[in-house]
Image 1: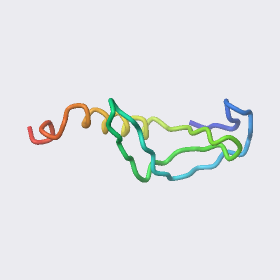
Image 2: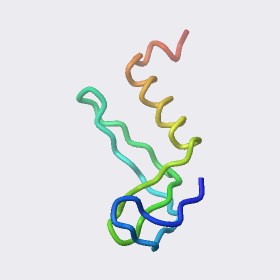
Image 3: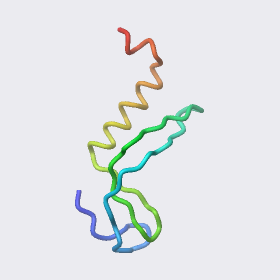
Image 4: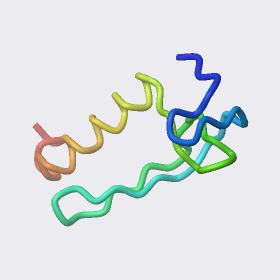
Length: 72
């Protein structure tokens, strides 16, 4: 996905970054390290590509299913 302008603030100062993201899933914090994204330098809005979204979905599913699901 090629983004040239931030949809939140209209800024054009977008850059590719690698960051750690914390998400609250049903009261549990999931930490995802080294997540690649595009980020607006003006307002901080984050844009994830399909690969990053799929990875987050996988981690959320693993957390919801619990530790025993990985042992099946």
